[in-house]
Amino acid sequence: MSTEPSSATVPAPIRTLDDLRVDGKRVFVRVDFNVPLGDGSDGARQITDDTRIQAALPTLRRLLDEGAALILAAHLGRPKGVDPELSLAPVATRLGELLGEDVLLAPEVVGGRSTSLAEGLKPGVAGSRILMLENVRYEAGETKNDPDLAKAFAGLSDGVFVNDAFGAAHRAHASTAGVAEQVEQKAAGLLLQGEVETLEGILANPGRPLVAIVGGAKVTDKIGVIDAFLDRADTILIGGAMAFPFFKAQGHDVGSSLCEEAGVEPAARALRDAEAKGCRLLLPVDLTVGREFSADTEVEHVDGVDTPDGWMGLDVGPKTAAAYRDEILSAGSVFWNGPMGAFELAPFAPGTRAVAEAVAETKATTVVGGGDSAAALQQFGLGDQVTHLSTGGGASLELIEGKTLPGVEVLRAG
Ligand code: ADP
Ligand code: MG
Image (cartoon, rainbow, N blue to C red; front, side, top):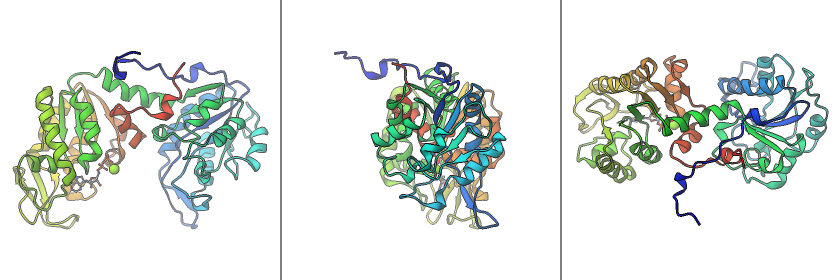
């Protein structure tokens, strides 16, 4: 048996669409259509942001161009059994508009009409070649990675599986992992392939200096990401409420700031590791504070990092923002996850805005991963000014942390 650590073994490459023969075949495609829904004027559920649907179009168009018919599987929300509120009907309609042809919707996930609808698909015939299954989480077997459900998914297709759902790739579910074992051909879609290659690329072979900006609410959510970059980055910039456990570890006052107690020890350890590994770990040098978590609260700037009694640190201060901006502008590559403050509240958005603008402006390769930082970037209208805006919040962080993603592993050659 080899005694090499597993990280020294280069994993087999993932199979891509180039490896598939799909002409005339029905292909089972897992997509991430977990879009936000709101109530429309007529009371029906409406999609409020179709970014995730748009992101799957290149893969879908490519498979259609190559002569395939598509059976699309996706989840929406977290239904416990069948829940009409979480039907994929609005998604099928929107996808049809974007593709310019009808998308059929199976009223079931498997069984019932899904079988006959799948059998009736006509590869190459517009209007009769795309079937969307109902919300896969209507089936209890989905999140249990039930082999019978996986077999049923594979059986709807002609033995071909494509996974383009990067946002769900960190879960071993029937439609993301199990189905891959039941087919003859399998591959990553273009979105999933791009996500994996970009995120692995910034870890394996980054332009230097590599600057990682890590912010957000809790150290314990992000310590895996911090650890990954302590080994690889030249500089780590810390911001957000996450800075306070670091300050507490250094003996500073945190006032009423959001300061996760369980984060203090990991923060102290990260500071020691940074020292030992020669990674520059930078903390804010000034703060913007408020009386409470509100947009109308009294606001003050603190030169220094002790939060006065009766105040909460809600953003990094202007000196910190300027310093972080300089680091980002002189970077060779940048990874950003987590806002610098409570950016949803206008008085506490400037720190996050400064980072977002610098990330948009720098010549470095820029990768933004994670829910709220991506939302912040979009809020400032800068979403299209980065090299890569990851569509998978949890999945991108797990990949950066070096965890294996079940939905990716099943696509590796061999
Ligand atoms: P991401 O989704 O990008 O990974 P997180 O979910 O970890 O980011 O953190 C985002 C949340 O952290 C935001 O809702 C923001 O309001 C909050 N936050 C950031 N800084 C502070 C702060 N200083 N005080 C209170 N909340 C903060
Ligand atoms: Mg978040």
